[in-house]
Amino acid sequence: MEITHAIRPRPEPAQGEPRVYGKHVYGNLYNCDREVLSNEERLRQIVVNAAKLGNMTLLDVRSWKIGEGVSIVAIVLESHITIHTWPEYAFATVDVYSCGKHTNPEKAFDYIAAALR
Image (tube, rainbow, N blue to C red; front, side):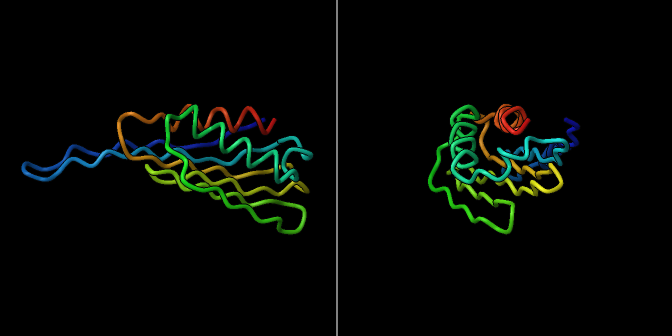
């Protein structure tokens, strides 16, 4: 599976500005397991597990079956996790954003990427 993603650290705040801490990890996942990509309940569980592994506080998970694919949106206290799938292309996009030094969005992203293989 090919993974593309970007991590951009926030620059240091100017003198006197409040420090905002956020990490955004996102990517396109290719050559994924088509059965997993079309399984709405499995994808919901993957997001729940990813939030736990990333030390995020899960508030809600919503999902929609759209054609062959699924869109999952998880709201976490620290921000969000999303997965959008296209099983017909064995392709998914994943977006994990979190605020707070206690979270680990990279770990959540890596778990999702491995689970979609």
